[in-house]
Image 1 (cartoon, rainbow, N blue to C red):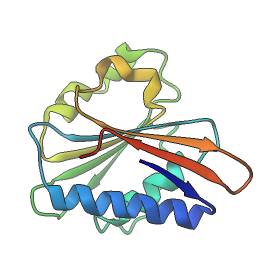
Image 2: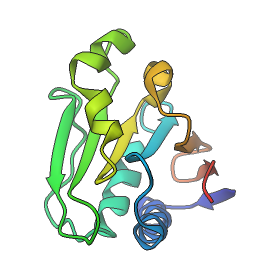
Image 3: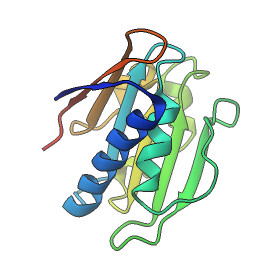
Image 4: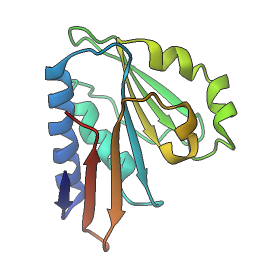
Length: 149
């Protein structure tokens, strides 16, 4: 599915709707993983801000670039934790493993959002939702959503 966003607000709305669909679909055998790709400034964190809103997270969402991983407790039936990861500073997938990602991804009660997921593709599960955001101009983004049923 390819969508066009003309503003950060519209990007957040698209992400919010995706979050609602994932919440409605419920758990799978492993964590729901959403892999985000795009150039610096494309809108990955903006997308995450909209997505987490579908799960009732009210706290300020910022990119965990320096801390790499941020957890948000969920009170949504079936889910316990939303994990927001920024892989920008990771040198390789081995760094990703030291964060405990295998355990995080294997827990079906988790939702995992990974910015810069292209840096850690080797460790992603076979089934994940891929979001690619293309920076068309200062305000317009092309959002491609793949692998979502």
